[in-house]
Image 1 (cartoon, one colour):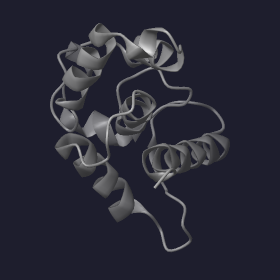
Image 2: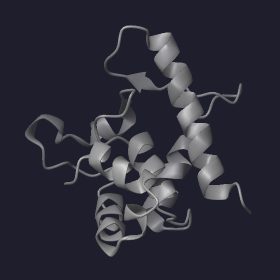
Image 3: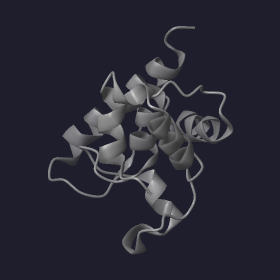
Image 4: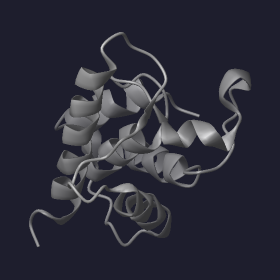
Length: 128
């Protein structure tokens, strides 16, 4: 599978994000949300719900961020499942208490991940 860092780089670039190959890569990645990865050290589905910031692995937030930048609709079935998981995990305060798997300042990382989730929802639904 294409690494999330490479996909994100293409998604941000105004020229490359419109290329058919990048859209196809996004479609491929979307089909793997909540499924086993091919990388031996990240094959368990649990890694979709374990987060690292800055993004360097395929997890739910990093993949949804990339797909939103590519213009995928929130109604896409795999994306919809991912967004629904985030809605279900949202605390009454409006924040998320996400499982962070690396980093020294987990409280600060938690803030960045919460911001990333808000950004994702804005990218998917902000213009509606």
